Amino acid sequence: MDQDSYSRGMTRRGFVVSVGPGMYVLGMAGANGAPLKKVPTSTGIDALFVPFVVAAELKIFEKYGLETSYKPFDDGNVALDAVLTGSSDIGATTEFGGLSRWDKGGKLYVTSYSSTSGQQIGLAGRDDIKRPEDLIGRTVAYPRATGGHLYFMRYVKKYNLPVDKIKVKFLQAPEMVAALERRDIDAFQLVQGARVLARSGDDGVFILTSYDYYSQGLIDDQPRAAAATRALIEATDFCNTNAAEAAKVAGKAFRIPEADMKVYMSRMKYRVEMPKDVVLGNFRGAAEVALGEGIIKKMPDWNDFVRPQLMKEVAPDRAVGW
Image 1 (cartoon, helix red, strand yellow):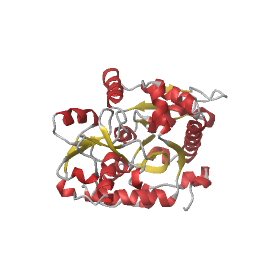
Image 2: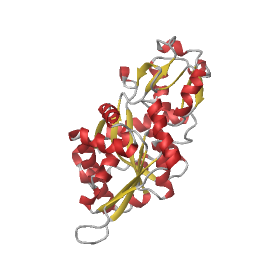
Image 3: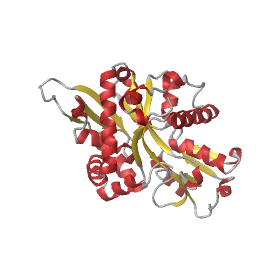
């Protein structure tokens, strides 16, 4: 339910494993010669993270007196760990990734979301699975505590499927096709080459949302955090108004053909915003599922975990309801 192309996804992962994630650092000094303040970021390697690449490669952060970098990891959840170790100030991933780390005492804060999609993830499986009911008695695979995990829980709830009659295996995307071929599983996260049963946005089941998580250090440095937020807004807006150039930049950075990146990006909506009803509604709903799945042990203190103050200051029209 997460990657759109297994073969291309394996190519990207192969690059990261064999060569190592790249660190792209831009902008050594401001116009007046003074050192720029650093705001390193960490990303996954798909279209959700294009704004971070654009922000760095086009030197958008420099306009706001910052020096930025991005380091790609296999997925957004792993990238978020860089925020907790202090090697990154901003990471992005879905609800479960942030909730699980917060529950373990991780100091990171939700300040906005920047990418959403009803098509990026989905459910794929064997030819004899044609309806939601056909999953009963079958085995489904997805990575634990990810957007795909949350989507599947929403899927079974939407179609009133008996969860206790569907076997689940927790697998990462590269393992899924091989498991399907061995008949270890019957359905799995969406990849190229398998029949698509559904996209996450079908019937209003689930909208994949990538949230921006700021480190404690960045939150505590309000001027730097506000400048970073302005830069991310500009970068995200650029992805909408200059999609072809953004695809070219991101495709080169992630070693994905430009034409493919254009397709992936066409399935995204890029916009930095922080509407109260959407953000709190999504996180509270996700937290309830996470509690039931054993991903977290308690509900977060939303007043601490979710920080709308930056968006209210920088772009109040994008932070309605607070």
